[in-house]
Image (cartoon, rainbow over the protein chains, first blue to last red):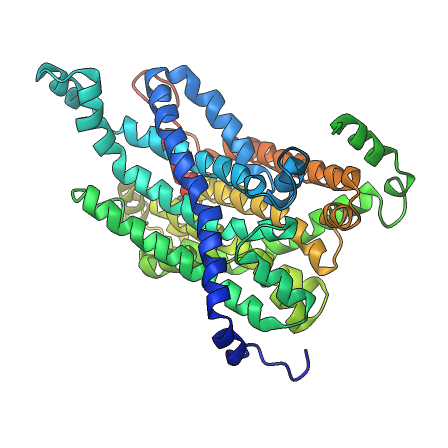
Length: 220
Length: 240
C-alpha cells in the first residue's frame, strides 16, 4: 500500500467500458428482484387486507427473512441454484424486498377511510373498479416509500454476491482486495452509491408523477 | 445435497469443539464485534438523533445522509479499510459502525418527533426545562422506536460481521469464508446457520425489550375494538 494512491485515474479512464458493464450487471442483479417483489407484495398485501388474519403470520415470517444474513443465504442456496448463478443472488434479494414492501403495501391499502370506501361503493364502483380507482392510488405513496428503501438496500446488498462469484460492482471489491489495489474498490463504492442515488431519484420522480397529491412520499 | 449430514459433519468436527476455531470462540468473537460496533455507533448517533428530533433542525440533511449511508456497500468499505489501515479490529469496526449509525440516528429522531406536541407543551408548562422535557418526557416515548432502530442495527451488524472474515478476522464468517475457499460445504453451512440463529435470537430479544419499553398509556395506539394497532409502528420500523 505504501506509495499507492487511493485512486489511479488512468486505470479508471482505461476501464470505462468495463466499469459500465459491471454497473449494468449490478443494476439487473439488484433491481429485477425488487420488481419481482413488487409483483408479489401487492397481491399479498391485498390478500392481507381482505383476510386480516393472514397479516400477522406473514409479517412474522418476513421479519425473520429480513434478519437472515445475505452471505449466509447465498451460500445456503448454492447447492440448489449453483455457484456464480444469477438466481443464487437474486432469489434472496427478492425475499428481502418483499419483507420491506409487504408492510408498506398493507399500510397504504389500510389508509383508505371506511366512509371513502363506502362512498365509492355507493357511487356504483365494483370491488375491482374501487381497487383500481381508490385503494391502489391511496397506497401509492406508501409503495413508493417502500420501493425506495427496498431498491437502495438491494443495490447495496447485491455487492455481497461477489463473494460467491456474482455481484456486479462487488467484483471490484474482491479484485482490488486481492491485488492490494484500492482504485477499483473506491470506484466500486462510488458507483454503487451513485447507482442507488440515481434509482432513488427516479423513484421519487415517478412517485411525484403518479401521485402528485401525495405530500408524504417525498419526505423520506 | 444432504443438509442434515452436513450439519452433522460440522458439529462432529473436533476442531469446532475446543480451541481457536471452536464454535464458542467464534460466537463470542462475533458478538464482541457486534457489541463494539453498536456501542461506537450509538455514542454519537443517539444523542444527535434525540437533539435533531427535539429541535426539528437538520431533519432534511439527516434524511439525505442516511439515504447515502444505506447505499454504502459494506464489503467495499471492509476491503478498502483493510488496504488502508491493515488487518485489524479497526478496519472491520469502521464499516460496521457506518452500517449501524444511520438506523440509530433516524430512530432516535423519529421517536422524539412522535411525542405528542401537547404533552411536550404540558411538560414545559409545569416548569420542566428543555433538557428535562427531552430526557423525562420525550425519551421514554421515543424508547420503543429507538429500540426498534437498535434492533435493525443489531440484526444488520450480526449479518454483516460475517464479511469481516473475508478481511482475515474472526467471527462466524470464518466458517463461511474458509468453507467456501476449501469447498467444504459442511463448514460453510454450519457457519451460515449459526449466524442465522444469532440474528433470529436478537430479533426475539428485541421483540421482548420493545414490548417492555412501551410506556403505559402512550406507546401503542388503541383501535376502537380495543386491540393494539401496531401496523403504523411496523411501517415506521421498516423504513428505519
